[in-house]
Length: 243
Image (cartoon, rainbow, N blue to C red; front, side, top):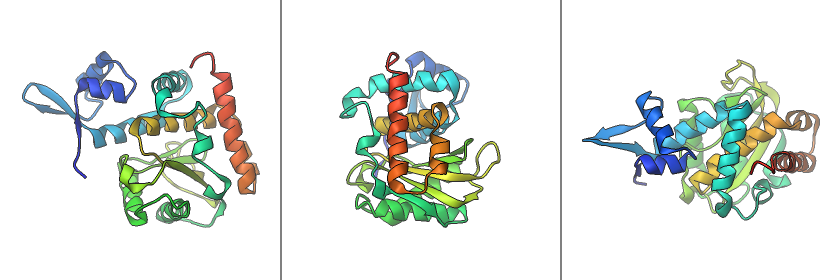
């Protein structure tokens, strides 16, 4: 699949930033870019990987502000404000995964994704997930990881979806606080902007609700699914005045 390049305005739109914001990131060399003559160009694959890692590092007001802006800009891409109702089902959830290593949890999550019937190439999905982890772990504080492919690849899926698994034995997955991880999401989206918005939504759910405790206390997929949907409703309701 040929790579696509973006200009400054494309990147600003893609990342829900202003052109001045992107120019400042370039000046500080905090964003991947290339120069071609007097032009700045950005490889979309590099920007997607950089943006997802940036979202995972957001917290507090910065996360709330990003989520508010991405909600505003992606309304026309989603059928309704609640995203997870179209992405996850109880059968997309594994309440007791037995994997004990990073590589095995990636393979098991990809196998769970394949069971949705929406994956066109399971082997390529595994390769893309491992490539993404090499860029930087998708684990974050709170015992959770948000796995996703190296870049948005619509041809890999028949439709966007989310799968979730809880490991019986916590796994050291590279979280910045050094703690092991036992809550694993795998997000597969067909649209890059919706992917980033959904990632921000999941981060909001974990940071702003009691979802972590609910998922750790539950033992059945239907209950876990309901906790996920309830946490999303709580985020939407508590921030409805900002969206």
